[in-house]
Amino acid sequence: MLSTHKPPALRVSRSYIRSHLLAIYSQEPPSFLAPALYHKATIPHDSKRSTTASLRQIKPPLINSSDALNPPASTLPPLLTLPTRPPNFSGTQRFTFYYQTGKAYISFYKSGVKSIYHNYKILRQLRSRVPQKKSFEQALRDGALTRGEYHLIKRTRRDAFRIPLFGLVLAICGEFTPLVVIFIGLNGAVPRTCHIPRQIDSARKKREARRKESFRQGTVTRGDREEFDDVQRLPKPILTHVGKSLGLYSSLWDKIGLTPTVLLPPRIRKAVERIDADDFAIHRDGGVKQLSDEEAKLAAEERGIDVVGKAMGEIRSVLLKWMEARKWAPITELVSKRPSVWPQER
Image (cartoon, rainbow, N blue to C red; front, side):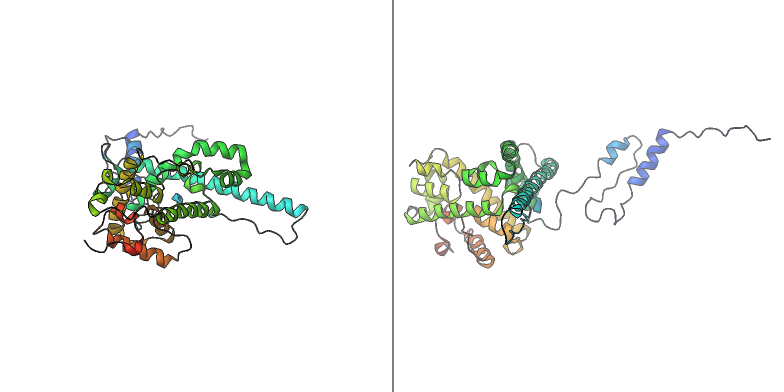
């Protein structure tokens, strides 16, 4: 006859479960589960703290710590792969080609928007390092941020601001968005992570042509060192040239024959502060030679240096010359002159 005796129910207290969970999560995760994706965080065995609060200490890293100089690739446009145009471009092949091209652009834009969302989550974590009354440039100088983290913050904030209008354009135009952006001129509405190669090249050529015209007019031949040290004392021709060279105001002002002289001084001061902090961070976090090719181009653009048709070696050489000249000259003076005449000493 089988026994009907039931074993006593196993009762496990909450404190027992909590202590064992803490013991598990306080161990370092296996290397095959988190090779470089998680911080090695330990959780103290404190019975007064909840398990949820303890597990919050395990967070994904902000940026790969091995590269403090270059921001992550997610701050740049993803790779755009377009189909090859068939030799017999007619009939069904024509339709298939355009359909695949449209899908490639939609996939590209989706990847760009996802990158912004990913970067924004990192940005929220980085904000906790910066006191409310301190600027990001000050945090960069104080060592609270690396150069890569600083540029992730700046680019993500700019891109997030452009998302609403760009999302509307993308929803209306769909696969025709690239045509609308290029031919109508909506660069200012497109996040940087969604810039197609042709759009980037076009914007660079226009800015450099505008800078070349300003140099041709000879508007920067005047001005001594003391004037360059103080933005408020800059003559109007130099003020205008710096604004054009750094892209601080729209070219529409040139077409109507006006210059926003009231808006330029505060914008130039902010640009000078940004470039000055970036110069400091480049020197601290690895130097010009450690910049990736695309980051070297972007750094040159931000300083009013031409990059179109230039070899990477030449771009890096000019950046190195810039860093050397910064020992003797203010930023506005370097922007106002060609690299060949940058001062090498006081």
